[in-house]
Length: 241
Ligand SMILES: [Zn+2]
Ligand SMILES: [Zn+2]
Image (cartoon, rainbow, N blue to C red; front, side):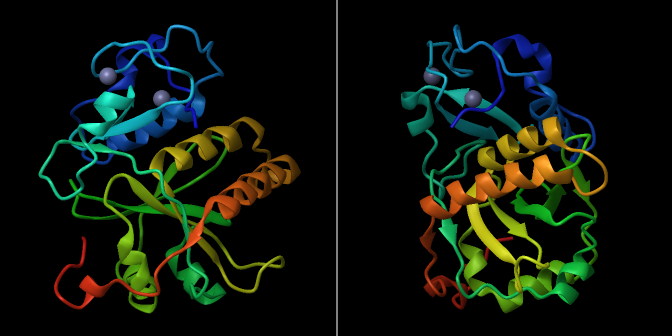
């Protein structure tokens, strides 16, 4: 999987400082707004070794930057239990067959379009939500308690790792009675937002965005394994933020 990132994006690649949520947003905007780039000359953001167009990513938890990495650098930060500034983005896709989120609960989340992704931001100590649109990704101010309700009804969602894995949710609607939820690598969400931005028309994205989204979900579904019904450590104080 490849993001539209490249070394020539310059200093915008790693925004630092500013309001805590701002770097996340600017990373998303940068990825969403970048054009397809030539793949020659891509290099590891950590050690500068040349890397192929399809490569793995590491999140800088402090700055929210997504770094393109070679395999050896990626492997340095795969231990999710260590207290590290950098986190490798895992490669797992999960589906939640018994996921429960009805139209009313979706409405409570106040997401204006039919798709959003949610992830725990460990710097902020809370879950943040983004939805796609013509300007790229927009952060949603999650109403207090609305996400807690979703989480309480679906304890298996706790398996998502902070900063590097997101819960990608399609709202209920005419095509589906209940919402569709997958755990995906966070870089896949950025990739999707970038794709959608390029074709987004009108308020709901239009036909081309819907087609793109359907294609993306087909791929996600085919890669996803069913999540375990519940994690054993959920009741033993192992809850994540
Ligand atoms: Zn490297
Ligand atoms: Zn990359």
